[in-house]
Amino acid sequence: QRMIEEMSLHWQEQLREQKKPQVAGLSVSGKGLSIDDQTCPHLVNLNEDPLMTECLVYFLAPGQTIVGSDVNEDDDAKISWIELVGQTIAPHHCAFDNSDSHVYIEPIMGAVTFVNGRRISERTLLRQGNRIVVGSSHIFRFND
Image 1 (cartoon, helix red, strand yellow):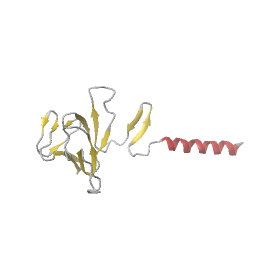
Image 2: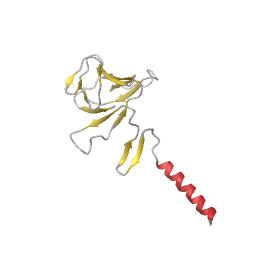
Image 3: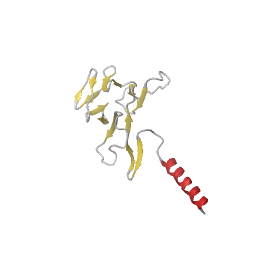
Image 4: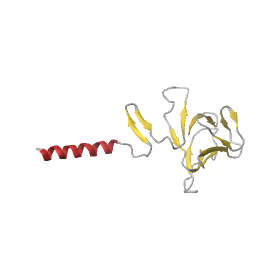
C-alpha cells in the first residue's frame, strides 16, 4: 500500500512538471500564462478590443532584434526577429538594441515608427511604459 502511494505521488509530481510551460519566464496562472521574468525587456501588444490587448508578448533578447515583414533567420544567428504583417510594414522595419541594461529602437531606412505619438527618425532610448507604433496598425507597450 505504501509503495503504491509513493508511486502515485511521484507520478503526480511528474504530471505537474509536464504541465508547466517550457519557455523561461512564463508560468501558468488561473487566467492563462503570466510573465515571471521581469528582468527581460519585452513588448506587449495593445488593441482597441480589450480582449485582444496583451495577448502577444515579444521578449527582446540581449543584442539586436529586427522587426519586419521579411524574416530571414538564416542571415545572422546572433540577431533575433519579430515578424509583423501589414501593408505599412517594411521588410526590415526597425531594430531594437538591448545592451548595457538599456533598450533602444531605431527605424530602418525611414520606416514609419512612433514612440509615445512622436515619429522617430533616429536611435531612441525606451523607458518603461513607452507606447510604440510600428507601421500604422501594430501598437505595443514597452516593459523594462
